Amino acid sequence: MHPFMGIEQWDKIGMSVAESANRLHRLAYIDRQLARIEAGHLIARPEYELKGALARMVWQDASFNEQCRNRCRQLRLSTAAFDKCPDIALERLTNQVLDSASTLTLLVALYEVVKPAQLEAIDDYMQRAQPIVDEPTIMMLRHQQLDRQMQIDWGQSTVTELLQSASEEERRDAEKWKSLLENLLQRAGGISGTEPRTEHEPLMPEAAFSFELPNVSIRDSRFKTNRRKFDGMTFEDNDAGRFEAMMLHRFYEMTATEALAYIYFSADSKPWAFHYDVARHLWDEARHSWFGEAALRAKGRNVYDIPNWIGFYEMCVNEFDSIDEAYTHLTIAIEKAAMKYPPGKREEWEFCRDKVQDPLMTTFQDFDWADEVVHAGFGQKWIIHDVHQGDQDQAQLAAAVTQEKRTRFMERAVGQATSHKQVTDRFAGGY
Image 1 (cartoon, rainbow, N blue to C red):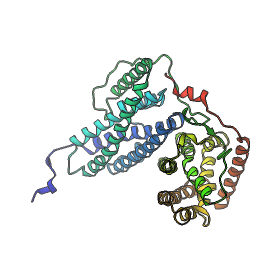
Image 2: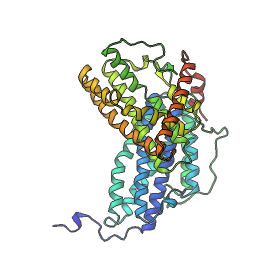
Image 3: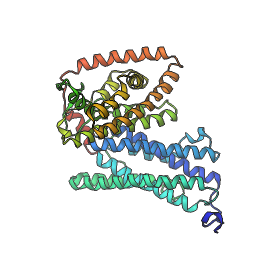
Image 4: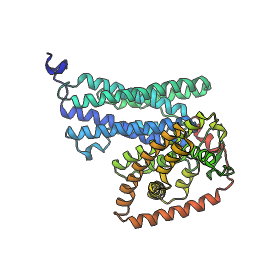
C-alpha cells in the first residue's frame, strides 16, 4: 500500500506559511476587484446575454475571494490585513480594467489578460506548494480551476465572436488596451508578485474613459423597454393569463439584478460579508430572469419581441436615497412579504404544479421559492438587525416608505418607453 495515500513529492520543501498566504492574498484581491468591476459593467453594458454572464461571474469571483479569505485566516493572515490592498500596482491594474470603454475592451481585459494570469498563478502555486502540508489550499484551488477555466473559455470565445464584427479601429483599440494592461500586470510582478517587474511607464490612452454607473438601464437594439412593469400589456383574467404574467415576472428580474449590482458596486462602507451575500443575491436574480426566459423560449416565444422592464433599477438609483433604502425595498417590502402564505412564493409553486401543471415552471418556481427564503434572511441580517438594530417595526415602516416612493415613480413612468440610444452609445464606444 502506497504511503501518504499516493501523494507524490511528499519530501518537497515547498513554500512557507507567509509566502503561501501572500500569494493567496494577491490572487483574492484581484477576485474582489473583478467582482466589483463585473457588477458595474453588468449595468453599463448593453448586450443582454452579457448581463447574465457577468452576474454569474460576480458570484463566482466573490466565492473565490471568500474561500481564499478563510484559508488565509488559517495561514495566520489577519482579516484586517487581508482586506488591505497587497500591492498598489495591482490596484492600478484593476482600476484600469474598470475603465474599459467598450464591451470588447472589457472582455479582452478580463479574459485575455487578468483571468488567464490568475490561472497561471494558481498553476505555479500548486507546483511550488508542499503537497501534504498545504493540501487544504491545493484542494481549494483545484476546484477553483474548473470554474476559472470555464469563465476563460466562455470569455475568449465571446471575444472571438465580437472581433468578427469589429471595425479595424475597434480591433486596434482592443490590442492597445491589451498591451497597456499587460504592461501594468508586469509592473506588479504578475499576479503572484514574483515575476520580474518592468519599470518603464506604460503609454496611457490620450482620451481616457472614466467609468461611471448610468442612471438609466441599458439594453441593446433588439429591445424596447418599459419603465412601468406591464405598461400597455393586458392578460386574460384566468389561469392562462396569470401563468403568462408569471413567466414575465421571472423574465423581468434582470432589472432587479441590475439594482443589486448597483448596491454591490456602491457599498464601499459595507463589510465584506455584505458584499458576499449581495453577490449571491445578485446571481440568484439573474438566474430567476433566466428561469423566465427559458420558460418563454420553451413556449416558442421570441423574448426580444416582449417589452423589457427596466424600472426597478432606475427606481433604485433615482428614487431611493441610499443603497440601504434600495435593499430595504427589495428584501423587506418585497421578498420578506413574499414569505406569507397564501399567496406568496409557496402558492406560486403550487399554482404551476396543480393548476397549470407545467413541469418546467414548477421546477423554476420551486427553486425561486427556495432562493427567496435566503434573500429574506439577508434582509433580516442586513436591514432589520444591521440598519435598524433588530427593530422589526422600524424596518417595516422604512419598507412602507419605499413602497410609497415606488408608487410615485411608477405613476410618473406610465407610457415612458425608450430605446435609451443616447446612453447606450456612450457605453458602446471606444476609449
